[in-house]
Every structure is written in C-alpha cells, then in structure tokens.
Length: 303
Image (cartoon, rainbow, N blue to C red):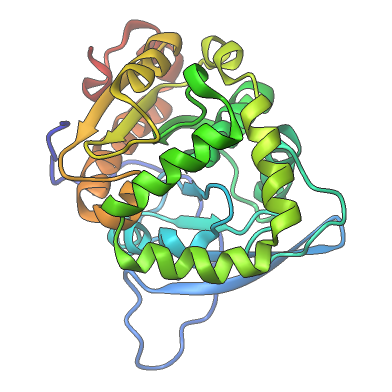
C-alpha cells in the first residue's frame, strides 16, 4: 500500500479557488459538507460538496458513485479528504436526489452528464475517484473528455469479463453483502427505492455491455486501481488486468476492505488518495505533468 506522507500544504500555487457556500454561524469549516443543486441544461443535479477549499490550487476530487447508490455512501471518505482539498460528489441523473430522466442513461450518457455537471459547477480539471460502476463512468470521461481529468482512482472497477451476466453479478453482489457494513445496506435500501427496479435492470444491462477493456488502453492519465481484500465482485486477477491495460496504472489491495472501500475503509482510502493527488499537482505546477505520466516518475505510480 502507498505510504502516507503527511504534507497536505501546496505552496507556490496561484490557482484561484471557486467560491464556497456561506457557512452557518458556529459550524466548523474544515471537513464540513454542504448540499448543493446545480442546474445542468435546465435540470437540477444534486451534489454534496466540502464547504471550503482550504488550499488554493489544490486539485479538486470528484467522487463518482456506482449502481443504485448515490453520493450518500461517499460521505465517510469525503470527511477525511475535505480538510485538505475541495471534494465534490454528485448524484448523477436518475440517482439519489437528482432529476430522473425518463430515458435510462447508459455508461457513456452518464459520463456526458458528469462532464456537463463539472462544467456547470465550474470545477475544471479534477481527480476522479470512482467506485464499482462509477469506475466505468470515470474511465469514459477520461477517454472522451480528457481535459476534465487529471488522474483516476478506480475502486473495485466493474465489470469482470469472465462472467458478464445479470445472474453472475447478482450472485457476487449477494456475497459482497457479507463483508459490507450495515450502513451500506441502509443506503442501498433508501437509494434503491428512489432508483426503481426498471432503472436498475436497464442500467445494469448497460454496465454489463460497456466495453471498458477497450477504453482502458486509451487512458492517458495516471491511475490507481484499488481492490478490497474481501471483494467478491472484483477478483484480484481482474483488478490486475485493469491496471495492466492502463498505460500508467498501478493496482493495490486494501486489507480487510470489501467492495465499497470508500464506506468501510475511508481513512485508508484517504491516505492513498492524498499523496496521489499531491504527486499529480506537482506535475501540474511545474508544467511537466505529461512527462511525469510518461516516465512514471510520480512515486505513487511506480510499479
């Protein structure tokens, strides 16, 4: 696992910070989260965001949820990252508290929606951190809208090509529940009611048919692939294959974690994300970001 250098400060950056919502009196700023609604093409998209970006020029982190669930299950890791950088987690259209389009959106359509929301929210280039199907969405954005993505963290990326069937995925999801915290079961129940059975079935079909293997070699950004030790949805062999297909990727296993590392091991995940983001920022500040990717010089990317 990547070591944690406790160096959150980023001196020398002159990048401006987006305005944060006003803080209610008496509430601590650092690590606090806020509810936001952003109109995207006339439709409301909900997101949880950190109250304030504590470091000018710190690379924003955008968390991308998986199937059925919403930004709600990203809150634990958001609280660990928010004191150090701007963190945002949208509910994509059809999910959570955002608007529900009549047409069910596939992976590429959800990636387009994520990119449109990032533009409307004024985020600019960010580190995308996806879980499960959120990894497929993040990869699609990185390939087709590379100007929005500085790097990727893929947590439990789906879909393992060895058994891309609804029955197989349902069986692995059932096994995964054994290792997930009770909080995830409650979140899945609440978000599942909002999501609906019709949308679940159609979105799962889209995810199963998404050709992620053909997209991975096209990703030009640095990427970390993380797998929980007890994740039955993402076998070790598949996580390693994902990293091997990425031109500048690396795979790691988080001990004791399940499929949703962001919920059951948020502190450990934050300890990985923070130095990775700092390594990318160093390249962005010096103008040598592309060279850093090409030669694998960022320490968290060394194989």
